[in-house]
Length: 512
Image 1 (cartoon, one colour):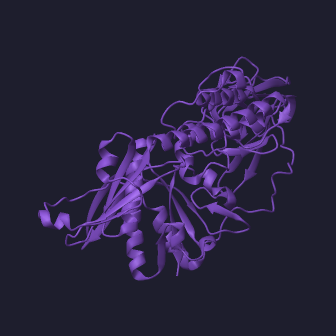
Image 2: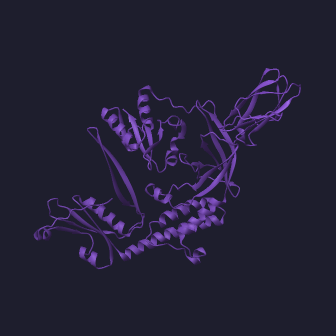
Image 3: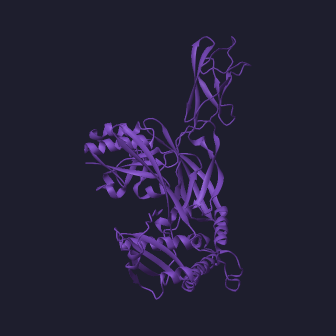
């Protein structure tokens, strides 16, 4: 937090009569001028707050990582909207500072402000560093032991902890050549080992599952993920496209959601693979640590052959005239080609074709999107009957993971419908804040952070994209331990919201 102080020139006699509380054996002047200490200062009318600010100031002087953040505030005043963005920074430290001491001085000004100097001797600071370094090296010992026993996946969380811990060190930490076999910077070594693990993963496409909704057919890509032929867990894999979240691999299996219609049988999709952050990494450190953990990019080839259905019918109009009509399901069609088997062709959607006056049959070929993978041939008899020459259409087998009796449509209560429609019509976070402020004043809702609502499981959640300040998702209250995204009607496990929307903002809304 940025600290702003207003210094006033005080009469000399007021400074002389300031009360001083010293917890160490040195004076403020010795701390600042001797060169033997690290120190920081804090000011406040409340002594405990001044202590915290002094400690924070000290941390900012010796710690490595500073996290920057912004807070956008929208205020409404008589229909006039003003927007302010407050920039601030905060320090995050995982260092255990041993021997930290304080000198507190209460100045006899009007506010009776406390001035607190936090300090630690450089000798004690080096001892703290040595202890922290030994903890990191012990984690490296355990990681290497797991690797030697063929358990690299189990060592990945420890390598993550090493990376997180090293970020809060004022200088690089190196391994011990006699102890670890080589002298190397342990943070980079840990990244290299995680990279090796990710690049050694075997990712195989298994199947495409479909699930029908009222408006579309949802698709799920089933993948298997193994390391040295063994299934792995706690790996995040996602389509590397805007709007698609990552999904967690468990016991070597994962399904990726895809809601667009394919335009070819075989398509390639960029995917990203990264390890899930270890549970042992503290919440306040997860964001800054996640940006330093390696990830892998790859291409996934998907065969939509099991769900694409191509067929056609022939209607005998009269004598030798026939109307041909295509039947295409689960495919975006941009080109149709007919070959009537007698040297004639057409690119019309439903062509009418007349054959010569004879009793011969003809092989008719329908090609979709100029792709040989999307082609079907049938023999048309003079009476208009069809016999297959080649088949593309295959009916998907029922799959256990798709349960027809389960609906992901959330029935919005009648009293909430107008409210939900209003949110779905909002285009930006600013408009949303204006809408919620008005509803809050009317007494119908309570909104804010999760801690601001009394019944979180019965509350709606608006997910905000921090880059565009647009609404990314609108989640329903919990039903059967799941929430429904009311924008695309997708079910999301309530326990996985943190992983699903990591890095996004959220507004919790409760009806009173």
